[in-house]
Length: 141
Image (cartoon, rainbow, N blue to C red; front, side):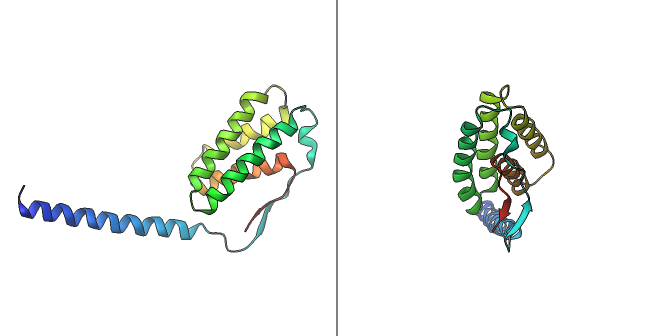
């Protein structure tokens, strides 16, 4: 290879890496919440009325949040969403026929998250659904 081509390739790669780093930092800064807000007031625990497995479902959700929330806080919003999505599908696979209200809520959240949303929005769509099942308000910090 000629020296010019190698030099051109080096400059192109350097410019790409420098620009990619700026884009990532810019994206992370845009989505950091500044204050604590209540996003939605969760309903009571009536979601478990028709569900004998509500405690098992709540345990799955709490485990997902215990992993997903720190992942989100580290800036990996798509990773957080994927953890929440996996937990929702696990619940649907195991308990869909036993818990109609929970099933309906999770299916609606998953369908909404499949729309044209950012990774941040997708994670929050799932988190709001989870908090509704848990019967707690959804807040950001």
